[in-house]
Length: 497
Image (tube, rainbow, N blue to C red; front, side):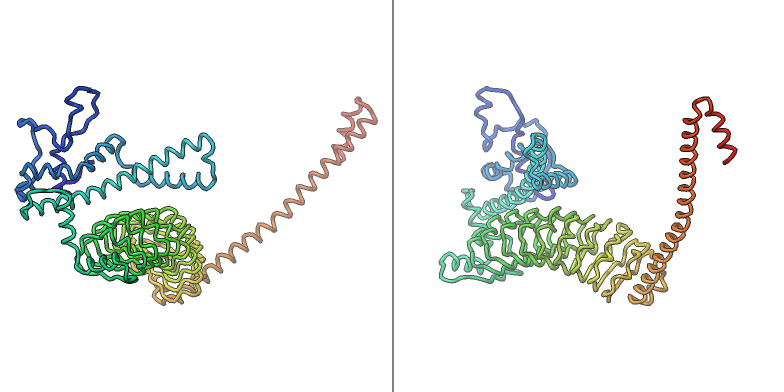
């Protein structure tokens, strides 16, 4: 729960000087008068952790500065206390199950029943806890930057350290062009449709940008942005957003309110996940989230992004794809190279418009391909290099449109290396002949089984018929002669048979 000193040095130092918030049943005046911003002095004999940053930033020993910093991170302290009560963050698998069950209950409207309603509440609580932890991590980053600005203000000689000073520091950090654009927007004399602020070393994404209702294209690539504010949802006409090559660790849920967005580039950041709300950008045609730290994609991403044509998530740590990816019927390009993919869902066969598929460099994780990959009859380029694939699917020859194929650096046995060396056409021809042979052998096997079956059936039916005849004859004669003649009748019939 506590911030990592390596990532948040100033915040860790300040938080260590906040009193521990523990549950207490005391009703004394001392407990009631406790002031978070002006805690009682610690016992000099108490052992405090050593922080190297105090040596590099000597002003942190200033009592007034520390008091101002305590006030600035009061929200972090309160949130930390709440999270300690609620518990640790659920793991990814637990969250995925909870989200799946919630969507399933919503889809079937079964939450009306008492049992389903109770389960629904539990799953929603798990998801909410995860979202609180995620928000807390973002809060830590914001708090660290806030403390940095306050310290810089102290160095500049400001005796009054408050949020107004911090706000002035932030405005000074803004690019002059950013300020000019915002002034034009506030004046309302000109509709701004395109803004390019790439490569400006910007650290701040001003919330005022959310007022640019007319904006269609926004390029903030190659900066030093660590967060995107929720106000981005105000860009209701935005169609292209490029925030690649920044320092983003997460995206706000409000990005899902950009209903007109068609192109989104968030590549080359530090993202560990994409928000589920990204699925609400239903007009999205291109999504580039490559060069990040993604370990999974949102479960329902394919059900709503049905217009997506290009999906690039290479150079991440993705282990598997959600089955919903098969619903992206418009997809033309799917790039998954340099991940940790260990399985491809069977639903991939539904991507009948897919032309380029790159599964290379998943190394020891990817060992086989689903047979349904052979249903991608429109596929033109396929890269399977640097994996652990031993055999291509039997129906591989059905990929008649395939013109570019890479499968080097695999322990491939089917087809053999000499066939692979002949190129893609040789591979398709070999796999087609092999499949024809498999079908022929199967047909012969069925034919052989068919010849044996009728004879066996005839013999069984004949035996059954003869048994019925014997039974009927025995019954009739026995009835005629009476019970006393039954044994003689049976003996006679057995001799005749």
